[in-house]
Structures are given as C-alpha cells and as structure tokens.
Amino acid sequence: MTKLTDFDAVQWRGQDDHQHSTQVKTDKKPRKPEGKLFKEKIRKRRIVSEAAKKIIQRRRFATLKKLITARGQAYVNEYRKDARREINKAREAKKAGNFYVPEEPKLAFVVRIRGINGIHPRPRKILQLFRLRQINNGMFVRLNKATLNMLRIIDPYVAWGYPSIKTVRQLLYKRGYCKYHGTRQPITNDLIQRKLQRYGILCMEDLIHEIVKVQKNFKPAVSFLWPFKLNNPSGGFRKKGRHFVEAGDFGNREKYINHLLKRMI
Image 1 (cartoon, one colour):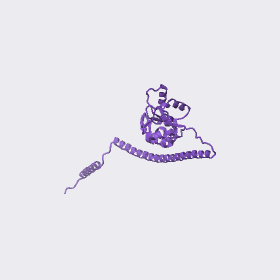
Image 2 (image 1 turned 120 degrees about the horizontal axis):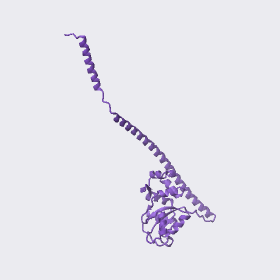
Image 3 (image 1 turned 135 degrees about the horizontal axis):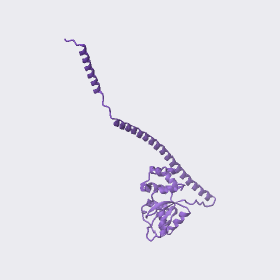
Image 4 (image 1 turned 45 degrees about the vertical axis):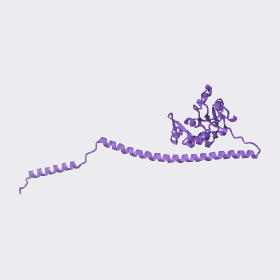
C-alpha cells in the first residue's frame, strides 16, 4: 500500500471539494425570469382586488335591496292613506249634505289614435312635442294650462285621460322601455340608477311614485322613458271620428282611459 504524500493529499482534497461544489450548484433550481415574476405578482394583486370588489358589491347590493324594499312599502302605505282620505272626505261631505269635489288631476296619459293624413302642421308639431309619432304611441303628460291648451288642439287625434296608480304600474312593468344611449332598452333598476340616481330615483317603484305624484323630477323621469308602443285595443275602436262623449273614441275620457289602456296593454 502506497503512502500518500502531502502534495497528493492536498490535490485529492481539492478534487473532492470541486465535485461537492459542482453537485451543490446542480441541485439548485433555476431562478424564474424577472418578467415572469412581475406578471405573477400583478395577477395575484388582480385576484385580490377582484375578490374585494365582489365583497363590496355584494354588501352594496344587500343595502340597496333593503332600501328599495322599505321605499316600496312606504309608497304602498302612502297610496292607501290617500285613498282612505278621499273616501273619508266624501263621507263627511255626504253626512253634512254637501258634495265633495276632489282636486284637479295633475297627470294624464295620452294615446295617439289617428295617422298623419290631412293633419295640420300645428297639431302635427304638438304630437311631436309629446313624442307621439306613430299610431298607438302613448306618453305621460303633466297637466297645466299650457299642456291643456295643446291637448285641445290635438284632441281629434288622441285619446287621453287620468290613469290610476294600477294602470301606471302595469304600463311601466309590462310595456315600459327606457332610452339609454339613444337605444330602446327594457327598464331595469340598474339603468334607472345610472340615469336617475342624481334625482333620488333608484328603482321602478321610485319611478312610479315620481310619475303618479307628478313631483319636481317628473320631467327627467318621463324623458327617461321611451314612448309606449301599445297594441290595438281588443275589440277595436268604435268610431275614431267622434268624440268619446258622442260614443266615439277621441278626446278626454277622464278615468275611463283606464278601461281603454287595459285593452291595449
């Protein structure tokens, strides 16, 4: 057995250390590129951000749902109180031997029933102002001195009257569309909030209340609506060339507009 010299021992140890260091280096995993690490970091941040947004939206939706439900119930109670008040006033007047005259209606619904053949430019312009460009188009109108004068001019071309709360609700829920970016869209609470939230109108019941009570934001609420496109009434019209009081169709029907709209919705 040969004895290792000092030089051989040092050389052998050096070779052993070199092999060990090479093995350690090869065992390490390769480092990911900086670009890939940055992309993963951005992706993780996006996931966290989206999860936080979903939580906020869920909480906001729950709060909004409670608010909408509370408002709807408050409106129902208000309508019931108003109806009860009218009945009580009529009873009190009857008891005293008088007649109770309710206040003048503030809201009308106007339906166009005739075309453009032989129509004078003035009533044609008024029909355009009311956005009644086609037969069976309908729209809500605030009643005041100016609109009453215009309704008298277009009387032979329209049927109009005073809609009930039930009729207004049916019109909006069944036949209601809104104007959104110049297009005709079905009415949803989301679209109402986008267009009318600055006026305090958040849902369909808010919109109904604003129209029925003819409040200060009536104009933007009605401008938000697309003109109603109604069907021909079941059974058809009787006589478009005669006034309603003469067993015809055009003119002011007062509360009987509800019967016509029921056949057209």
